[in-house]
Amino acid sequence: MQRRQFAAQAAAVITATAFAPMVFAQDRPARILVGFPPGGSVDVVARLLADKMRVSLGQNVIIDNKPGAAGRLALAELKRSPPDGSVLVFSPSGAMVIHPWLYSNLGYDPAKDFTPISLGSTFDFAVTAGPGAPAGDLKAVLAWMKANPGKANYATSGAGTVPHFAGQLLGQASGVPMTHVAYRGGAPAAQDLIGGQVPLMVDTASETIEHHRAGKVRILAVTGAQRSRALPDVPTLKEAGINVTADAFFGLYGPPGMSPELVARIDKAVADALRAPDVQDKIYALGLVPAHAGPAELATIQATHLKRWEMPIKNSGFKAES
Image (tube, rainbow, N blue to C red):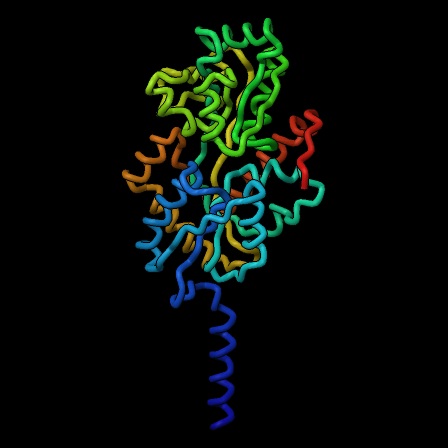
């Protein structure tokens, strides 16, 4: 009798241990790491989702900004975290689909070292002219750049980013050799655009949309397949006669080895958050699109974007410093 009781107790312990990753540790908050400073669009969206996820999960969820190395520091911490849902990362797609083509020693394999959980939003980029560019539409600005090659510069929030290579595609498709000017973030790039130090900027619409509305700069085109809901009067590059599209996404990831049950629970919390009208309105206001996809679809989207950027990056000859 005692032997059977002991065996039953042991089996219960083993079962509880095996399924421990299915629930959050209730004695500490879950952390969503953001590998960039507060205030940027990825940080804002992460905070919007976390506020709603707290309710769905019955668990405190905090945002922990861990800026550095273009998001790689946060992902390095995620890779070595336990698979219990206590540490997650909300990441721009560049870290998963651009970095593998740039770094010879990246330190992680985006397809193997993380657990995809949820797509959080999608977005494209704005091509914005400042007072350093002439009046007119995008074709007029590009014609001016071609006639003034010493002024044919475009700013982005950093080297080795999706906007960096989107700008290169724009230059190639329009026949205008443009020089990339990398900044440490979108805010300083936008300030130099407003100040006339650079004539053009390619980056997320959230970096320039308020300046556009205030008349300080002009968003000439967006890089997506269709017009932005936040900028309905602004054409796409294709509508402007340039055969280029470029988009990106934000995704929520966990460490390797998370149980399917836990992943499904967190994914549902994200889906619930993205259905909230106030969350949708705030994401749209940033020039982004609230968009949900589950783990399998996020993995497929990631693989598609990874393949899409391979040749543009290789053809550019750009290599990031480790």
